[in-house]
Image (cartoon, rainbow, N blue to C red; front, top):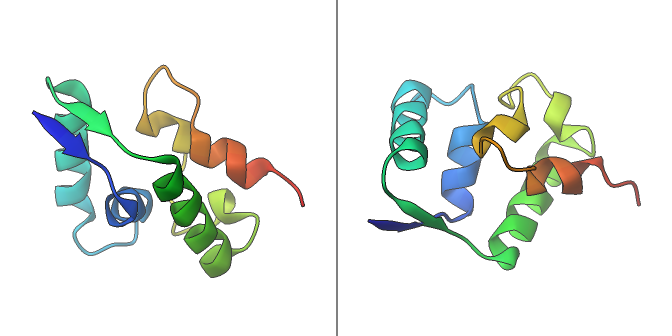
Length: 89
């Protein structure tokens, strides 16, 4: 199964304070470790990053509502979100 990951999916899995967090995390793990092919676009990554920076500032990755370890979203691959959030203007 192919799954297109949009900004709402990224935001849901990153938001550990979400009331549906357990369900979101379970679904994300099923997609990651199953036979699914996950797709997204540069535009989605940029839009997600802009939303995180707007809501939480440039230090979004250390905000208490953001799930720790952004790199763990895609095991074995560097996280684009972490890379972008670490950039200084």
